[in-house]
Image (cartoon, rainbow, N blue to C red; front, side, top):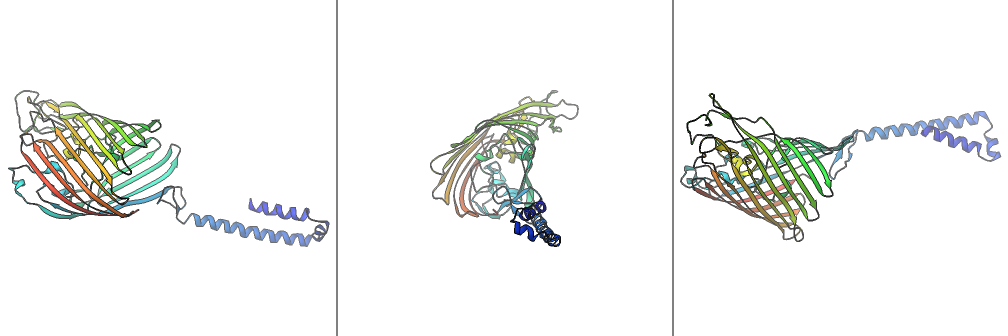
Amino acid sequence: MLRWIMMALVVSAVLGGSPAARAQHDDPDDLKKQVEQLQQRVDELEKKGKQRDTLLDTVVTKGVAPGAVKLPGTDISVKFGGFVKLNLIHDFDPIENDSFKNLFATATIPVEGTPEAEGGGRTSLDVRETRLNLTARSTTPWGNLKVFVEGDFQDVDGGFRLRHAYGEAGHFLADQTNSTFMDGSAQPATLDNEGPGAMVFMRHPLVRWTQPLAPGLTWAISIEESETTITDPFSIQPAGPTRIPSEGDVENLYPDLATHFRYAASFGHVQIAGLLRDLRYDGAGGSPDESVTGWGLNFTGLISSFGLDAFMFQAAYGKGIGVYIQDLNFETPGQGNDAAPSATGNLEAVPALGAFAAYEHWWTESLRSVATYGFVDVDNTDGQAGNAYRRTHYTSINLIWSPFRLVSTGVEFLYGKRRNKDGAEGEANRLQFAVTYYFN
């Protein structure tokens, strides 16, 4: 195209000039010479254009999101993120959580009268909360495409753990991320990586569809990997064909079904979520299988207050939802709280309530505090042992300073209390200091 434009300009100049100019170019040799010069110039311009295109295919350019860059020769924008975090923790009381000592899990507080409760406090340093992630964005016929992968070192003994790995195109999302039943944006900013034990928190493989219904209102529905914890029936062994045999095992035949409605506006957001699941125990030795239905409701939100202040809350209740409640994921093996034997040995979905409230106050633009309280209450079945988890309380308050965007440091005090089915109790106090350096 450039070649023809240049040729047209020269011809126009020759033919459209004055009679004297036209006479000057009547000589065929002169005209041929000018055309050759023009051809050489066009060839030079085309060569520079190709060099420019080749250069653009080999250099990094700005991506579609802040901090993102485009991969050379593609329309894919990538962004690296994450942080490095050091925790300095002093426990004034014993907490039986050696594999995940940076988590203040109130379920692991030993009760009085046990050998574990006789231990003392400890001081530890930990960096396993350090996190790495990668986001890739592009466009597809289904809408904008987002691929997100994130991991940390929160696995046993500091091993790498996959947190998120999913792709989202338009309304459709698949692979591993937060459950549709939870609300991660209502989670308070505690230095403790565990957060309130009452929080609904589950991350696993799922397939989700999200549908906008009105301005600010969306509906989501998903099928999700089913994980079930059932109390082994060691504490009661009645006769009869309906007894759950201790030789049996948990069996998940169907995925969990989760859904939520979410409304977001200038005030913040609120969300109501529901969960439906099948809890099944595979009998052994010729005994029949046992199966019950689990269900749950979860009401959450984040409401803006004065200035940058905000109020966060959650109230979740259901039967057979123990694995979705943060604290109950730390239960002793064999004492799961999704389902347990009844007085006659039949499988029964265990009722559980998890609630928390938190308030975030900004003292200045760089200094803030978050106060959090939460509790979990389990309505134990008659078939659960006396040392089964009954109730916990979680309280924390912190002071966080962010002198500039890429650095944050703070101190936090935490208090927890556990009570068992038989009334035995235990308490724990912790002081935690943390410093975080962000990648972007």
